[in-house]
Length: 610
Ligand code: DON
Image 1 (tube, rainbow, N blue to C red):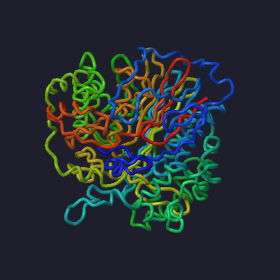
Image 2 (spheres, rainbow, N blue to C red):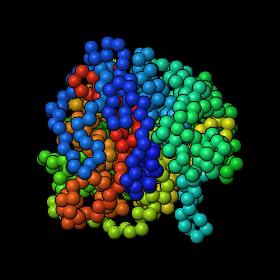
Image 3 (cartoon, rainbow, N blue to C red):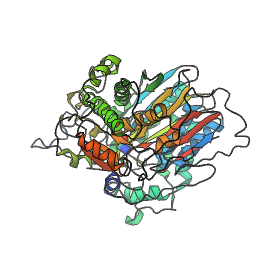
Image 4 (spheres, rainbow, N blue to C red):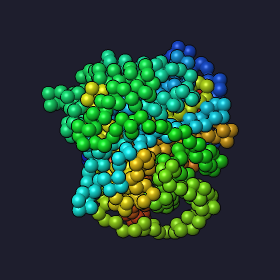
């Protein structure tokens, strides 16, 4: 369980250091933390969005955090009457807001945002990776688009083991680490089925950002200087001109990427999966001993799945089914927590104990029973059932932590490499909502940059159990269900989620980056809002915890837990693991008269609405 990656600090550094993070923030209008609001449309504030009624939730109450916590409660969120986009990149959120203002719906805007992130947030925003999109339309339709990468056809179960059967780092760095990218096909399919604009229209902002350039902010500059991986491959020329990392204030123009994006805009997914872009990708792969072929690219298909629908204390969650573990594991955790008639006060010993115990149990199932449903049978009904949760609840003692089992060596594996993913949330004035999480897996993916086409490739193969029973780069110990097979999707933790109130209207659009902490972090925003009646700003700033079964430790944020609570948790048998920062969430919440947006206060980002 890694702390969230920081754009300013690698997660490893973030975990070990108390150094302050220098955020980018182009402040204009109302803002929270590092968020940016461009909430300046004339007349905004006069009119609530016609289709968005007031949310059915209890009144909010002021949150109280420990005095030692660095993100005090009481900050304001960005408000907009009509529509909102929140992501880790202000420029990308702005691109989405532009589409929303032009009358596009949330899917149009989400796709615009996704392509813009590929330009302005290249460490994670991508066309060389994959992701998931959960959609809730105001007419009642819902969808879950799975555009996760798949293993190339030539992949084999033991491809990352050396001659002595030892796991190598080839699932993380270099040309063998990539799954077949799904992002372009997935976003195009979402747009075609649920959008209202053409690919050409929604890709314009991204193409412009790539072609004309944008100014590198301190966050991006520090992310670039913090990566050694990029320097090992062809992207070094773009991001380390003359051997030096791009400095803050530099205009980054990406002509190759602009050409690639224009080709996709003109030809649709075929512009990526066939033709010169595909040829460049395959040539790059074979130059470095990779196994991906034109055939792999040509046969890639996104899958539309039925979203997971679960309930928590009268609210409905729409979330991602496998191949992501996100929705099931969140649902299972929340089902366990729901068995307590009331929730312990936020931040109390009992709260940490029950929430961590729930996550611990749900992760035991996640790590052993989940995988790509096209390849294995997943016991979804069992894992999601309320009676199963009752049974698990009975294994939780009120006064003691239950050891998952003792595992010492894993902590090293946890911090093998920095990582990055990014989540964005969008709502439109019609009442449609989109939650999307996308990733290259590690920060800057495998490091491999496709020459001539200008984008980074993912290292998603490491999300498989490259050696079942051994930890991956997130310390996740996974089983046979998630072993490598050709054409199979690697299990994900990504958890784009939409929460509906009792009138089935959108209440929250939320999701996160941070490997397995995605599941626990996203769940905690839901718990903070529903159980602790926090407003969104407080829910986002509240100290977080994480437990993923193995390693058997309870990760907490430094300064976020009072010494007394830490003492009593230790006395109960919890092994506490303090880190600087956990999870990178971007969320939107419906409030009276409109929407509040909050980008991750621990990172840079932008909430832009009108
Ligand atoms: O799909 C997954 O679960 C991982 N590839 C996510 C990686 C991640 O969140 C890294 N980021 N911050």
